[in-house]
Image 1: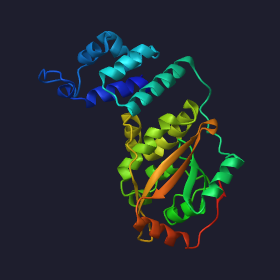
Image 2: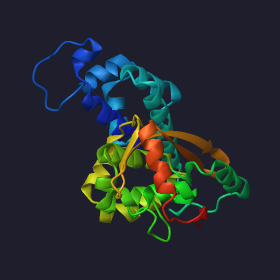
Image 3: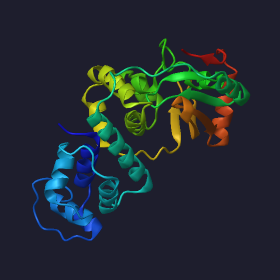
Length: 278
């Protein structure tokens, strides 16, 4: 049985062409990408040890080995952070942890007050599972008619993978789906992620599990939306980490004047007030 760390290393190795690392093309290979022997040599470890890591038989490689593999794979800073995180949760799975469970849904009063200060801006409080825990009225206006907030406990990840309306609402649905799947690795805890993944996988299908196991670090560019009213919106995103709560405050900013005007029009349509969902 594999591990998050082993799966990432194997997927990354398969995605790399030897020529991109200055290695000679040795002809036909049984699998795409970089040979295991070449990666082991670049990382300064044995092929047998690399095989154990990739197959999940060694779940606790040293920090030095993880860093050597990151160097050998030429990972960028975001990928390096991800592989270090995966090594921690892989080691944690080896030592054992509590039963999978949902995360807390309450939002601190001071965070809710921050949302009120941000009115009439577009903002929400969420976690890495995609739970929409609180939001401004402008966020509700921008998502009105899309179905995102229809559930008693709205969840962006579940919406993206199970609601057909999401594929129209998000212009770049594939990118958003990759973002939401990737963020599950950064959930408040391993137990939370396992709980949510087990719940979502049967209804989201193979596309969800494939994206979850790709470990592609998303770029998180401009968020482009097709509002049901006909407005096309382009939003920049600023995410403020509320580390003490394992939550994030996400602020959405119009990327251009056309979007700013459209948001203003949506805000003046009938909609609700600030909501704390718990």
